[in-house]
Length: 321
Picture 1 (cartoon, rainbow, N blue to C red):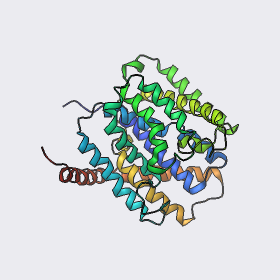
Picture 2 (cartoon, rainbow, N blue to C red):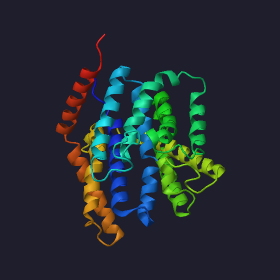
Picture 3 (cartoon, rainbow, N blue to C red):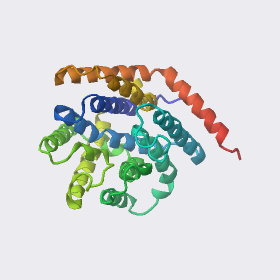
Picture 4 (cartoon, rainbow, N blue to C red):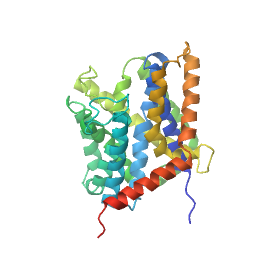
């Protein structure tokens, strides 16, 4: 059996750590000052990169459409409902058409996986998807309902990942990709501190009007955001090593971390005892806490339990031919 290439597990490990760190900072300390700058950097690429990689592996997947639907929609309904029943729910706890916080990704992933086979065959689908990404920002009512805004915006990254060929970047010099990565991250910091792009814009959920900018300005912002996210994603893929590290397991078991980390962070945030009075200490605490959460939730036992459970759900739900 061919040994699993750790390249993408390493990238996913970094990304899932940033997901946890971004939520830790947001729910413990907010979006102002250096916390806002850190969130802007993280949010500028972490979910676009995750979606891109999901698209890349969707092309290699041999799962049937019923299996895909039950797996992702079932996982969404279970964990979205669990969070909706928790003290930290948002919107109506009984309305599963409005995803709770992070679980929009599962719903969107279900949409993308079942539609990519047909949509990817449409001529000029990539530029069309990018145009829809820009257009949806003009629609005031396209927001959290079934994550329609994110489903459309992030589909471009999923689609480009689906069509991506790793050979396109393998011959690029590492120093060039490292320099490009540093330049892009610096640009994100610059536009944040100059107030050119609010942090909330990187979530791809608000309309331009809700962000208090004109449609033309919002479209310009979104073009910058898409370009930055794609370039950073490609740089990460090109720079990522293919050998295993201690943290590689975070990427391999990233789904269990993603599904459960928000419960831990919300519980800790609710205690209101983790503000140490200065930014540096708070940031160090956030880094350590995020690392511990990833360590605990990446335990193979948790992933094994989830896989066995969801496989039984799929087997019980899909009618055999």
